[in-house]
Amino acid sequence: MMLGFSIYLGESFNTDYIQRMLKLGYRTIFTSLQIPEEHHIEARFTQLQTYLSQFETELIIDINDALITADLFERLAQFNTIRYIIRIDEGTTPAIIQHIISHGHTCCINASTVSEQFLTDLQDFPQLQKHLIYLHNYYPRPDTGLSRTFLQHQNARIRHYHHDAIIYAFISGEQLRGPLYEGLTTLECTRQIDPCLAALLLRELNINGMLIGDPFMSATTSEKLFQMIEHNHFILPCHVDNGADTKLILQKHISRPDCSAHVIRSKYTRQQVARRIEPFNIQPRAKGTITIDNHLNGRYMGELQITKINLKPHPHVNVVGHISKDSLPYLNYFNASTAFTFIQAKGEF
Image (cartoon, rainbow, N blue to C red):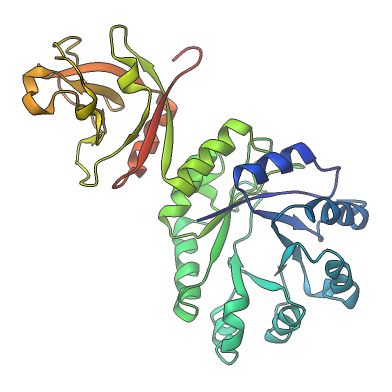
C-alpha cells in the first residue's frame, strides 16, 4: 500500500511539513499545474522541484494535454533525481502516453473518467501498461464525490483490461483547502469522516494507494495513518481502570490469526502473567471494552481482549478499561495478526 500527500503551488509550501511526511515514509507527492485561481505556479513549481531533488520521492503532476510541451519535459529533465508521474486529467490518447513514456516518465490515467472504449484502445499497445498507473479525482464541492458503487465499478473496469493496475484515490486532510474548505476526497461518504477511517475504507475497496488531498495533516494523524495502512498497526487511545495492570495493557499487542466473532484476542498476554489474577470489576462489556481473564478461566488467565459487540458480565472476565469512542469504528477493520497498541487518552474520555 502506498501513501502520499499534496502540495499546492498557489502559495508558499511548508518545507517542515514536507520533511516530516517524507521522514514518516510518505513517498508520493501530488501537485497540479492547472488550477486556474492559483498564481505564480511556474516559479513555485521550480522551487518545489529544487527542494524535492534532495529526497527520494515521486511527484505526480496533474496537467491536461495542452501542457504536454517540449518546455515541460526540459524542465523535468533538470531534476532527474525525482521520479515524475504525469497525470493527464483530460485529453489522453495512446500517442500522448507514448510521448510521456518516451521521456522516461510514468503516465497516470484519470481513473474516475476513463472509458471502456479508451481501455479497449489501449489493448493495441500492450507495452504501455507497465508504465501506467491510475488516480481517481478529488471533488471539492460537497455532494459531487463518487459513490462506493461507482468507484468499485470503475476499478473493476480498469482491472478487466489491466489486471494488475495500480489505482490511487484521495482522502481529506485536516487543514482543508479553499475556496470551499469541504475536503478534497474521492468518495463522498468519506468527506466528513476521520481520514484514517477513509483510508481503511479505500483499502477495503482494493485501492492500492491513498493521497491526502488537502494541504496538511497533523503529525499525530499522519503517523497513525501510516501505521494503520503500511503496517496494519492500530494506535488506540484508551482509559485504563484503577487497579488494572497497566504494564500488561499499555504495550504493543498482536491479534490472534484466528479471528473471533465477538472479541479481538491478544496473542501473547497469557504468557506474560507472573502471578494469579483475582476477579475484580465484573461489569457489562460494551463494544470497545478492554478485558483480562482472571484465574477462574483456568489456562486462559491473562488473556487480553477487546469486545467487538456488547457482552454481558462474566465472573471469569475482569473489565480493565475502554478504548476511546473515536476508535470504535477501527475495530471493524481488524484482521488476522493485526497489531494494536493502547495509549492513555488525553483529557476527557
